[in-house]
Length: 331
Image (tube, rainbow, N blue to C red):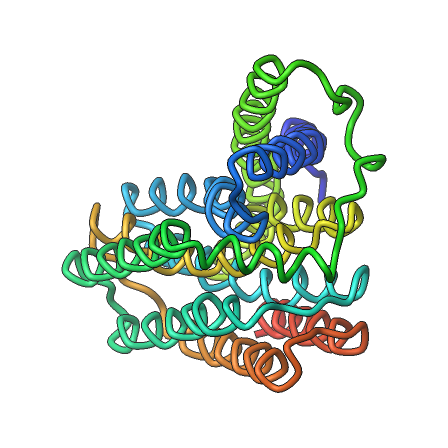
């Protein structure tokens, strides 16, 4: 089989744009958090997580408009499997980390609850507009809880607690990260975040278009394309961003990115897509949901018992995530 040249070029260009964009995003977001007195964790849970989930939103919304429910839903479920299995596993393997009680009680449990909600709305293999609206309301409640934590000072306390566990290695940041005048630095940080998000979105789209083109040429089914190729492609921003953050010893952004992105994928991406057009999916969604439930339960249990992820547990997560891809393709 000859791989279309245009698809191959799009794939490579997308990977390059994602890498550069991720570095700009992490650098700018971490500095803005420091300047505003907001913890890196909350920035990871919101700005970085939602930004790196933009490709999922773009792809699932487009699929909904075209009546491709399998691609829209498969992208969300597969992306969350990728987030918890491959990405969180890679972060723990690179830099084992602990989490604060606040992250566990509010954010990790919200992520687990969102998986239960996903199973509930997909129980009849259809996500209606009403389901989509409910998901968006739940997302609003979660964002409200984050905002309340910032206003009441709980976020600052969590930031202080996590500061004793990790430190940002400024030497790992891209060129141009040295101190400059306050106003100039703020402007540069904002530009860094905006440019990073733009590159992540464009790169994610190029990568997915290239990967899907190759997959469809090979005659792969719509569900497999959505749940594996598209899901992995749209999750590359989270992977690159989290790995860059973890290597820079800014694990709060890395962990927050994974958790926040997983919540946003279910409540935000699936909510918006279903609100645009009801989504009907193939029966293959049920084993995929079961696999996501296993990964979510394992991650939540490990973090709840020790509030930490070790390298061994990271390897276990990667193995579980990889098994999903092998099983999906073989099936």
